[in-house]
Length: 480
Image (cartoon, rainbow, N blue to C red; front, side, top):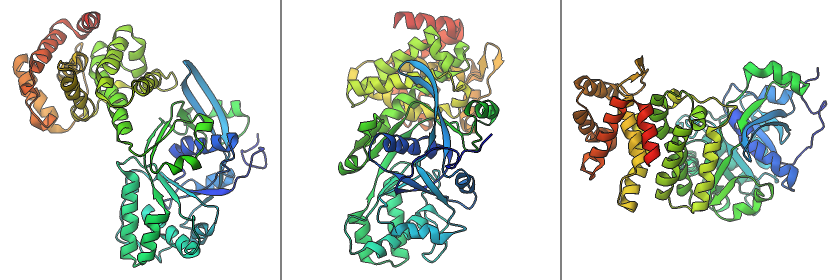
């Protein structure tokens, strides 16, 4: 059986227009797939040069396969469960700057270079005081990028339109702004001059981004089956879900250079990404957090099974569409479409997502993901969001640590666990609700001051504990 490479597989060579810091599963299943789609369906002609951001990495393996790898996309597509795969061929070569720094820094002299993409983990966008311009290479990703940009500035300082569009994918807020701030700090520390600083500001674009796709990674336990199906050896197979979203915040001109619309890619270009970040946190993450204590105490262990259950599924849909979406400022069409995508993702038969794996630190998650919807709903509707408060009551019951006489393995900060252990030892549910809702360390405010909220949660908690989650939820869904 042959190995996957450009000698054994018919592929296309593309112009090297993109430097990519990071060769891991996420970028290969996310950004590289989108570049592949634009290459195949438009004249984008985006060849990628992958730079290994740390000393140990996959670049040797990537070069052994001439940048090729197989991507499996598994999930719900147009209402149907779909598993499909294709060979991605946009990566032209990989560079290990720790072994060949000259090959790396010379990339700056390429007149066709236009984009920088990165995913170096959340810790990657950080300032390293030890980095110097003469290092080969600098240890940090921002240090390496600053050296590359300075080399490009030196090469093309008298030529217009040779700045770069920099699109980081690290999962931190304002990733582009933070990356630019560190680059400018290095420019000062390394005494690179005002002309370089002005070039950074005027000729380069640092975008803030939001990325969203579940990427389980290398399917090690399925590789024998996959290899037999493919008919070739591929050491870089990667899996991802069907859903994808890339929100890119920057000037409108970027859209003219990235032909996403022509390929029906879910790339959103905006001058303000906050509504999209809020949408994701409130709907996707908020739905997970809303579901966990309800579904788990109901007797369900996985997200997919929760959606397949008529009662639990109806509860979650009511919470999303009737109580979370009305608190957001995007159009109803956008919110409904995103919410339906979220439900499809939850139903994905190719991914098994345990509710208990989402339950870590549920109190802080409720505060950041769900409570803002509760408060905004009350403000806008002048009434209580009963589904979201049912979840809050279920959460308090969850921290009792018992499901049908089975001990729940609670995972949270020790002060949280100690608090609930003390509260539930009293067996006084009125007191438990009052002490929990008034705990400003949990919520940042005293929730008992909100008219009717304490009574609602107290009533629901008593029903859950006394009548059981199953009977309580069934009656609740029927009447709400």
